[in-house]
Length: 252
Length: 362
Picture (cartoon, rainbow over the protein chains, first blue to last red):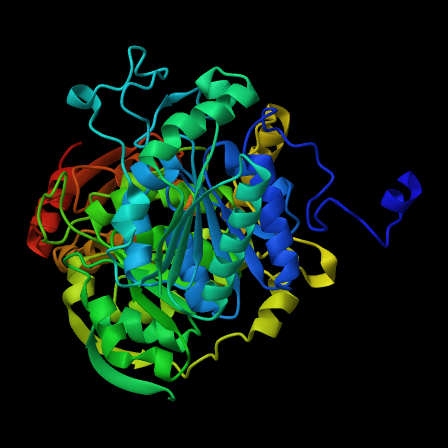
C-alpha cells in the first residue's frame, strides 16, 4: 500500500512544481505558506509560468519572491497596484498579480488600490487580511476587529479612538472597473480548495481582460495574535469571519 | 515622422522628444507649470502610432511607482512633475535607485517651500542633486538651458539611464518649460521590441518570461548588513565611474576671465547676457555652465579658481549650487552668491551689479 502512495505516477499530494526549496521564514501556523502553494499551483495549471509577474509587498510577504519561482518585483509599502497597472499596460500579454497584506493594501496603499480597481486594470490583487501588522510586531491594522488587542491597542480596538474595521472588499464592489471580488480562507481543506478555485478564476479573468479581480484571504497571524495555530484558526472562524464573511461579493 | 523644425514650448518639446526617443510609457499627474507635457502626449496619441502607453495616474506617488514597474520590466519609461510633486516622488526615486532601474524624470521647478508659487525657481537643487529620498544614492541630473536642449536631453537621459541602470532627472524650470523657441525635433528612434528587450536586459529585467528557466527579481531589500554594505559600495563604484565619465559643462569667455560666473539652466541664460554687459564695461567676465549637476563639473571649476579673482554663483534660489562651487574651488578666492527666489527672475543688470560688487571687494 505504502509503495502505491510513493509511486510517482499516483501521487496523492505533492509540492507545487513552482515552489522553491527555500525554507520559508513564516511562523509555523501562518496562512502565507498555504496561500503560496495555491498561487504556485494556479500559475502552473494555467500555464502562466512564462508570462507571470508577481508584485510582493512590504510586510511578511516581502520575500514571496524567494518561494514562488517566477519573475517578481518588490514594491514599496502599498504601491503594488500602481506597479502592476504599469506592467499590464506595457505588456498586456503578461499575467500580473499583487500580493498584499492589510496594512499595505488597506492603510498606506488605499489610494493605489482604489484607483487601480477603478481603472479596471486587468490584474489580480490578492489581499491577505489577518487584522494585524505581522512583520512589525502586531500593531493595529485598518482591519483589526473592535475590541481586538494589538501592540498599539493594548486595551482592545476602541472605535472612538481608532475608527472601525475597514471592509475594503465590500467597498471595491462598487467600482465599475472591478469584475470579481471574493473573500476566502485557507484554514480548512474545504476552504483551501475553494480559495484555489477562486484564485484560478481571478487569474483567468485577468488574462481574459475582464477588469480587476480582487481575492481577499482572511488569514491568521497566530504569532501576532499570541495564540497557538489551532487556537488562531478557531478564533478566526469565531470572530474574523463574522466581520468578514466568506464567499463571492461580485462576479460579472 | 522625420526630422522637423518647429516653434514650441519647452514642455511640449519634452512630449514630442519622448515619443521620438522610443519611450514605451509615460505616467504622470497634473501640476503647474509642467502639465503641457501630459496634455501634449494625450493630443499626440502615441499609442496609435508607436504603441507608447500614456497614463494619468491618481498621484505622483502612483506615477513614480508605475515608472518603477515599467523600468523593472526593461521598458523606457518617463514621468514629469514640478517641485511639490517631486517631493511626493522621492520615496519612489529612492526605491528605483536602490533597485538599480533606468528611468527618466522631468522636473520643471517652481518656487517653494510648501505650495509656494507656480512661478519659476531653482530652489530644488539640494532636493534633486543631493538626494531627496532616503539612502546613499545619486541620480544623474541634466540641466537644459534652451528648448532645443529640452529636446536633446530626453534621448540622452534614456541612454544614460540604461547605460548605468540609474534614474536620470532632467532638471529644468518654469521659464524653459513655458517659453517658446525654435527646435529641431530629431527623426524618431523606434521603440524596442519585447524580443530586443529580452536580448538586452533579459539578465535582470522582470519581464515574466523566465528566459532560460531563470526567474528575475527586482528588489531593493537586503536584511543582511554585510551584503547591504557591499551593495552600497557597488553603487558608489558606479557613481565614481559616472563622475569620471559623464561630466558635461559649457564655458563662455573663460579663457582670459578674471571673474567667473557659475550658473545653470535659466540662470545661465541670464548670466550669459550679463557676461556680455560686463565685457562691454571692461570687466573680464566668463561663464561656466554646468550641464550635468550630478556629476558636478568639479575639475574645470577647480582649474578656473586658480586663475580668476572671484566667482559669482547665480541661481534662482537663496544659495544651493554655490555650496558645490565652494567645494570645487581649489584656491581660496572670493565666492559669492546672487539669487532671487519665490518666482522672481533676476535681470542681467541685477547680476551685473552683483558682479561689479564682487570686483570692488578688494
